[in-house]
Length: 395
Image (cartoon, rainbow, N blue to C red; front, side, top):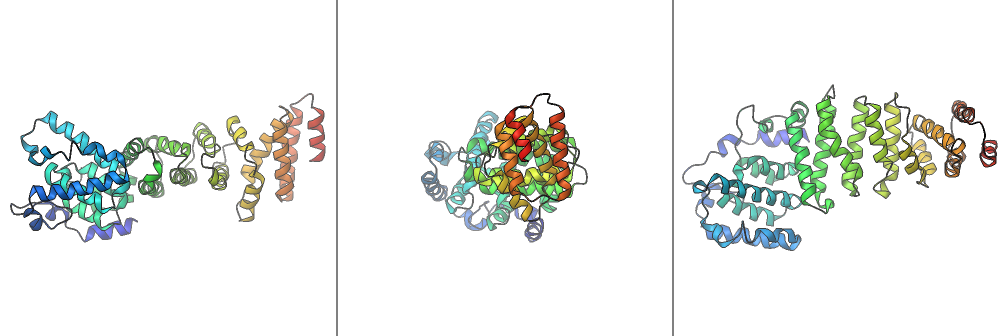
């Protein structure tokens, strides 16, 4: 992705093309000279047509028909407005851009943007406009937007467009914060998160790429990433949940996390928010226990969640059959299942453990691990129920 982005940017002379001359007008759909010949009424009709098409896709856009697309807006002049009016306008424009995120590649969105550029100079709201199109960085329309905005010196948060995207994400925590906050805002604006698949995919690429490029994962980076990762693991939207699983894998294989943080991740993953991704979630749990060797715990809430997965033995068996080493995770499961089955007399724990051992072909050396788990549980329990005794004999 970084190479593709760099290739696009090499073909652009952004600073030169963003300088406006008297006989030109910034435009997304037309060349600057052609745009300068169009009346405001013509551009307004183009934008209004795009808005009507967007309203058909999502009723949320109807709110802008009487504000940004009101008849009176054709006579609006930003330069003569008060700071208060312009700030209020900027909030409305930003909400419009957030709402447009899932629809950026549609032609109707380009028509709407043409009007917003013409009358409200929305390209001067550079950060919001760039964040709208950044997830679509491989599209030709992304390049058109880049030609409209101006980049300042190297202290500019978006100066990285002259560099590699992921290199910048790894070196500038401020940009990562932009991405994080932007996705949070999108999630607030769009109740149907499945509309945000492109933006969510972009979040996944930036986060995993950042982790890949960095040698050391600092506290500040974790503070930016973890809240969004946890939110994704809570999500019932498959794309968001899956993206968060991918980022989690990259995180736990890249750095050592505290027990407290791993507890939180394991608890959330074990809730299996998206039912048809249970196998993938189980694989991530396996990877956590394999990569975080110091971590010996499974939170009690996670155990309860895991026990409700009827297909767990089959999932673990499939993972092992596909060449995955499940033993670090299986060891922790066996230990917890045995403890619950003996010490707390939990029948479900005993049943799940027996189903796992009946189906999964374990190495001979792992048999001793199982015996050790059983002995540890028995030694801490003075009186064992007859049901638990029978279960131990069967095992």
